[in-house]
Amino acid sequence: MLLIDHPGNFKVNPARPAEGRSAGIIYALSSRRGFTFVEMMLASVLVAIIAVAIYGMLSNGIKVWERVSGKSSAIDVNIFVDRIGMDLKNCLYFNNIEFSGTSTSLEFPAVIAQTARENQNPSPISRINYSYDSDSQTVQRGSVDCLLSAQQPDSRVMVEGVQDLDFAYYFFDKEKNLFFWVPQWPPEGVIQAGAYPLAVRISLEIPAGDTVERLVKTISLPIGGLGEQ
Image (spheres, rainbow, N blue to C red):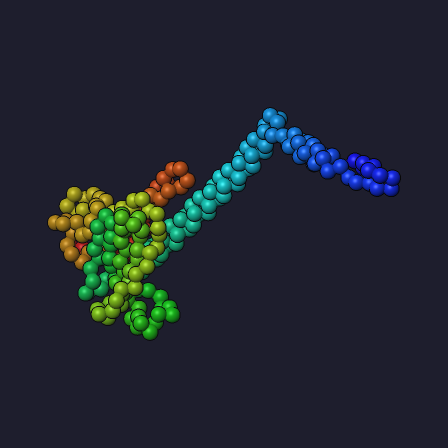
């Protein structure tokens, strides 16, 4: 506000601008307000929608991973069954190695195809071993050249995640004139050492989603019964 002191002389009243500044501050403070109930509800709904969407994506991702893992296990099981079937069909009678087995392992001589490891395995005849480890739930295959007793076994895991595995051996009891499955080979007091079973049965359990799938495979031996008297 301007005040006239004398004609031609003007000066500003300092109180008026101060009052204006105070009024501006008061207006600015009074213009600030909190969130309304409707705004809070809208924000809560948006957060809930985002959380549900994230949970759905994570859940679908876990299901896809489980399906992929299950298919991978099934493929490994098929490879294992094909490999042990080929080894058993290629087994042969070898003087220094007898066919022996328990419910979780078996060992026998077999003819194997020459591969890139031919320099390390000069002989086509190898001692083959399959074993199941319940602690790690793995099935392993080992092989070593029959002519190189000092050679370190070539061992690798064939299947993982196997909850149970059982080997059984089929033979004919001449005294009883009956066929039997036994949990070990050779059956003590029935078949002499050096004989071969007629067949080997493989039973294993693998997880399939929320359930456990049981697979049973019977493999006949071309030289089954060899060595019996």
